[in-house]
Length: 114
Image (tube, rainbow, N blue to C red; front, side, top):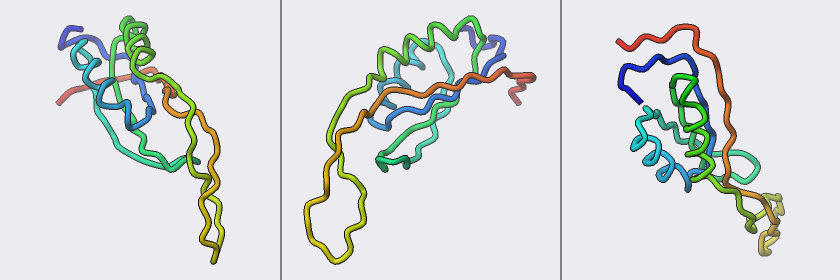
């Protein structure tokens, strides 16, 4: 991508925190500008990362291909966060799908870099 490309879309990508570095490195090597916001939460209380990526819509297929290559889903056992007051027992484990990405694409009406 050219440094002064038209920015007419904003991609918001929510990904697993464990996959953030690989994807961010790949995107910056391919010329995308990425802002990374760390967070956690969800039902599994796992670290997540939100990437904010401004781009020209013609580069969206390349961006999505990079995300598909780096953000695979997988199944693993995680502790179920069930309250068990006064009991000292092993936490119940549940099988969950982790990883992958949730992508939101928004049209940008105006972009200025100051």
